[in-house]
Each structure stands twice: as C-alpha cells, then as structure tokens.
Length: 315
Ligand code: TXA
Ligand code: MG
Image 1 (cartoon, rainbow, N blue to C red):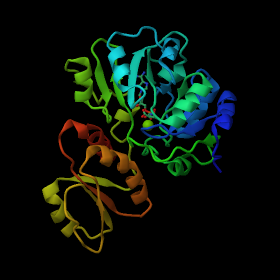
Image 2 (image 1 turned 90 degrees about the vertical axis):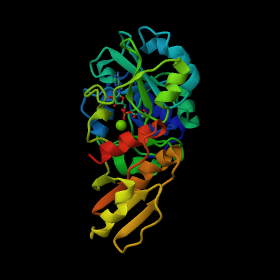
Image 3 (image 1 turned 180 degrees about the horizontal axis):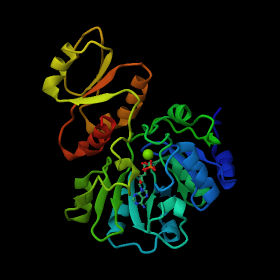
C-alpha cells in the first residue's frame, strides 16, 4: 500500500531520505531531497529510469537559486517574473555542489517553482530543493491524479500527498539558458510565443536534443494501448474499415456510432484538452482496446505541447 501523507509526515519522510510523491500544477512529481544521493537513488529505482537522465530541482523561492546555479543570466529574470511559480523549467549552468545524480553528469541543472498550493507549502516547509521527476514508471504517461500515482508506483514509494487533478495536465515547458541564446527543449503549456513576447525576440525550438532530455526519446509518454493519429477527414473512413474495439479522441467531429467504437469528445480548446489528455489515456488503457485513434490536432502553437505528447505516444 502507498501511504497517503499530510505535510508534516511528508517532511519527516523526505528528511529521512525517503521519496514522497506530491502534486504540482503540471503532473504529480516523485519528490526527494535534491542534496541527498541516497534519496535520489530511490527515485531512479522507483521509476526504473536510467541514471544518466537528469532531474528537475523544484524550489519554493527564488532566493534558493544561488544554491543550485553558478550564474543567473539576465534573460532569466523576465522569465521568472512572468512565469514563476508556474509550468516553466529553466536550465542553468550548475553550481559546483550539485550532485551528479541531479545533472546526469552534465554541467547544467534544471529548476522550476511549481504553482500548486500543496507543492509550494511542502517546498517552503522543507526549506530546500526537491528533485521531482514525473511520478510514473520510465516511458509511461505522467500521472495527473493521486490514484494514477498509486497505480504507477504502489509498493515502491514511502508516501503520496493528495492535491486533486492537476490543472495543466502535461509537463512543464523546458527552456535552456545555459548555452547562449535561450532554446526550448520541451514544449509545454507556456508557449513559444508567450516566451518570445516576454523576451521581445524570437527563440529557437529544439525538441530532439537526445539524450539531454529524456522526454525527447521518441517512445516517451506512451499508454500501453497502441495509438494512431488520423487526419480529421480520414477518421470516419478509417473507422468504417476497422473491426476491433477502438476508442476515438476527437475534438471537432460529430460522434460516429458503430458497435466497436468508443467515442470520446475532447475539447477544442488546447488548454482544456491538455488538462484531460493523460487522465483520458489512462482510463482507456484499462479497457483492453486494440487501438486508440486520435484525430490530428491543429497546427497553431498553443497546441505544441499536446501535439508533442501525442506524436511521442503514437510513435
Ligand atoms: O512538469 C514537470 O516538469 C514535471 C513536474 C513533476 O514538475 N516534472 C517532469 O520531470 O516532467 P521529468 O524528470 O519527468 O522530466 C524532466 C525533463 C527530462 O526530460 C530531463 O531530461 C530534463 O527535464 N532535464 C532535467 N534537467 C536537465 C538538464 N540539466 N538539461 C537538460 N534537460 C534536463
Ligand atoms: Mg517524465
């Protein structure tokens, strides 16, 4: 049994070097004292994640940055002001004391201040950084509810905190500030154009920087059921020729009724779609379907994060 814990118990466990899952506004994270190698090893073990994949350090105040970062480039300040606390991870040159298990042996460190009352209370009471990868087994969908965390990690973590369903629903936008010009390493619900607006200039997007970002392995964020992306105008034709049990995630089509088809109306709003996506895929994974068909989503940049996760899940 995974133990649901309140804040004082969570702090006690973290101080003892245990791992505790907690909610953030993006997805649930698997938290461990970011200065304690023993605790960090438990994170990798619980997730079955390769040890060279770096972890994001979560902090409760900007004053803590100095502990982790060697130099804060000017460009970081407007981004932190605009988006922290919030779903933005910034990659900096690391300070010397940051342990290799955090950085994957690189000279950089990722930091984020999450915008969830439980996470912020936990971080501020803990008074230090918590490493927190998404609380799923390696390669699987990130959990957006406490029960999804328990499904994923039952038996391999010391505790989990309840925080309701995550508001954002997909992982944070990652921006690399460690090598000259800012670059987007992972799209999230803070979009390229929002970031460009704050910085007043164009920035580059590099989603395929393998292996620096484990999320950029093609097979990531996948449900167990096979997934296929189909263009809007081809969905009905595809279904007419398909005999096995299939679910359809559609944001624009009227329901197509057929015995083997389970129709799921998704939102036509990117923010709401992202909020619902992982929970929906988890639910469908339990239904023993042959396939999940996903109607291709729009090309505009507010859909970047959803498109990225769908492309990887369908790979
Ligand atoms: O929204 C999120 O970011 C969630 C919540 C829990 O905060 N966390 C999350 O962590 O998605 P994780 O470990 O599942 O994904 C973090 C990504 C990984 O792909 C990792 O490679 C990348 O961040 N990352 C961490 N530190 C990095 C660094 N120094 N340089 C490049 N990429 C880094
Ligand atoms: Mg993850």
